[in-house]
Image 1 (cartoon, rainbow, N blue to C red):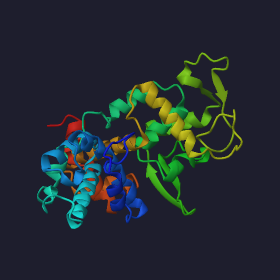
Image 2: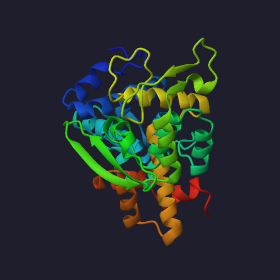
Image 3: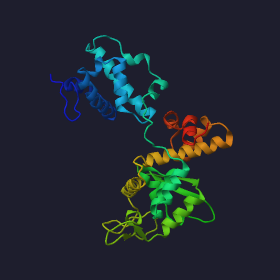
Image 4: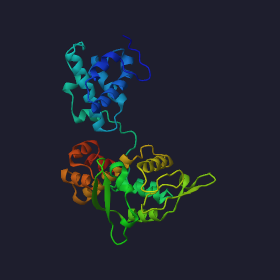
Length: 326
């Protein structure tokens, strides 16, 4: 059997596919991704992952460069599971699984890649939004930073002009779940975001390329309807509520303009959670389970996910790191 790999194919493909065969679809993809990435190291060492020692496994984990504790944990579990299967199949040279004795948070943390900036302070977010000439753009960033998102960005896209008020900063949000049902909640937003939303609601045109377009028509007319966030009329077939692609396109353009490839919806939301947590920490002098629950509630993160977000980023060490607190 050839061990040659092409275009990140599985190393020792027949054996790997035999292992993957019984997995349900939700875990099949995760396991196959790790095994495909492992092929690069397997080819260098000329040996199958199931025979790796701990040093070689650590070489692979460093190559995978996970961005969070959760993704690192998933990779470790995938590797451990594959080696365990190989032992049962009498494929490994010994019956010792190197990862059985080293599982733990401190072990995972060694391999989490923190070199790429993915969390932003409120000042950094403000500098980005200040550069944007379209309030339609800046308000999207600020919405995410203050906890407004929803399924398929529906909380953002469902904001109506009539939802805005100069008398109160309480806004009702409507999240359209994949099941088709609507979930409503109310939160208090900042004066800054309320101003952005009013400005976005009043915009009738969209400045292309953040006002620096060389096109014959440097701006496009926005659809007229009851929503705050609206598409440009060009190439639009539906004139009602915009789709999630509107948010994705604008975020991609903003990220490029700001020179921040990690300026994604997820990272903006995480940054907002860090800021909210930082404010609670300054106010109370502690940041523990109760504070984490408050942050998760504000950002509509399910409470059963609080352990994961705490492990990944929503903890006092990350808060102090982002905001340069001793």
